[in-house]
Length: 573
Image 1 (cartoon, rainbow, N blue to C red):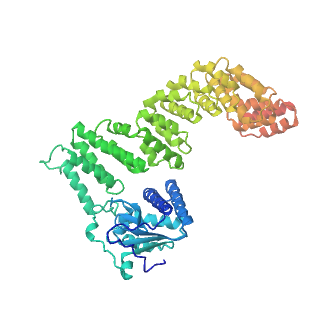
Image 2 (cartoon, helix red, strand yellow):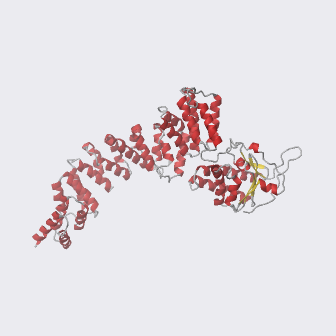
Image 3 (tube, rainbow, N blue to C red):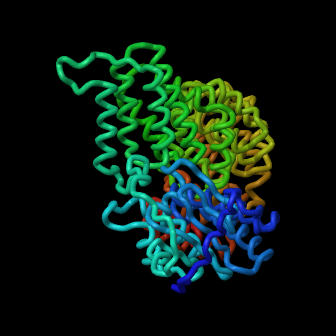
């Protein structure tokens, strides 16, 4: 790593204490501020999501674009001075945060980092490595590593940094930060469970909230304005750091011990704000954890659903939709789907619309199938929608939830313009045992989609409809002699057998089908009547192809087919 041993000193203040005139052109200052605004967003995303996540990748592209914009206007390193609450570029603040718990400036400053320089050949890999340092520092012990050490270990090439020791070794007079200002209570915790001191703070708050379990403890506690403000402040500071479990325990303990409806409503209002904040950050893991723990605790009936009604407002649902459109390769067990299982029933229509988003159809249909009994009327209404994916979703859910009871409604979809919808609904109806809908299904026999035709045939044959045999004969007459697909013939013939075995065999014996089609039929079916009929039909033909195939059938493993073929060969002689 290249190091500069004598950084330029800060611009001194004038004698009257006034701020020195800015040395950075306004257009450059605006670009640098945009760089650090985007850097702040990207650091948060890199802390919440893995590097390969689309949210992180998109943020990195925007950040690199901001750096490119700067270097295109000013082809020189971007030098940043670090103070307790600000990042300065030539004495001009380009980043500022007074919240020490989340401030990027303070997290570097408290470990002695005084200056950063971003060089002109800065690339994505090195920039991401630098940003991940803010996440890594949260995962190490206080006495193990600091920010400067982690940066040294990365051996960065296009990002130079200067710590307190570098300034002192250069002989520059600098203000040494007092250890008093490094308040560990508001520093980000560096272990998964937080430091012991932080855990003690959480326990202290739990004791205040619910007592310690002694006989003399209060059976219920009271929340005054200061308590509510304290909890709200803790939410804002803990939302980005641990111990998260401790906060959830505080909420659970609150609900267990306090029976006052007004105070409970205030606490649940805090929970609602927390859930909305987590959704804003795409942190569905922790949002789901809160909901699931509230559900598992079984504290009060309807508590989770009532809370989610206030969370699942249009603005929040639109943010969820944006996330689903961006993340179309999520695993089936992704936490977003667990979160969506808690949506109130009057928001299920959003889930139905989201089924049309590529990559989410199967998990969302699973959720809707679980919730289908709550809003059957909604799914019935969806059968008349134009969007094919929505209609298919409704068919799937209704078939799972209450198939027999939904048949009258499912019939509506047979007139849908999408052949996939007609094929799907005809496949469902083909397995019904009621002939009451024959009139509705008759048009499907002339459907241009072959599979839809076959499924309609299956319905008529299964229910032994009086018209079934004549209808199938008409299809065979119009399709059988022309069609070379044995699957088509097999499906029709099996439908005929369901309707009338004798007439089906007689029909097959006619010279309507080529020998090659009949031989394929023999290979594909294990129906004894059908196999014998096909063998008999082949044996009644005098062409060389039929004779050669009949000789092969005389060696068949099926004893009945073998005997029939041998008998016909003998008669030929």
